[in-house]
Image (cartoon, rainbow, N blue to C red):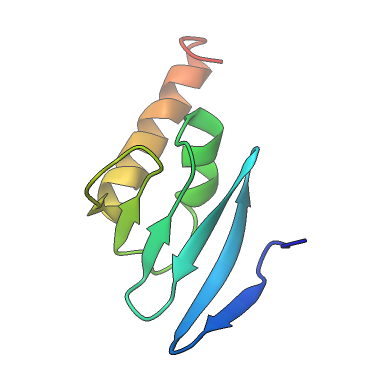
Length: 87
């Protein structure tokens, strides 16, 4: 069982586990790349707070995107939730 904050060494890489609703996200610490499952509203809000992320690779994306975009999307989702536009 993997827990929030667990670290796994895989050869020359260290991975840190982050829990999101129904998924986990894995931070590859040497490049600060975050590998996620599905990125829906709650997941975005959870992983937007993971420190030091430079790129995010979602479960359905073929390329990574800049972590700053994740923060912007997280903020937009928060506003939409406040206006009852999303659940």
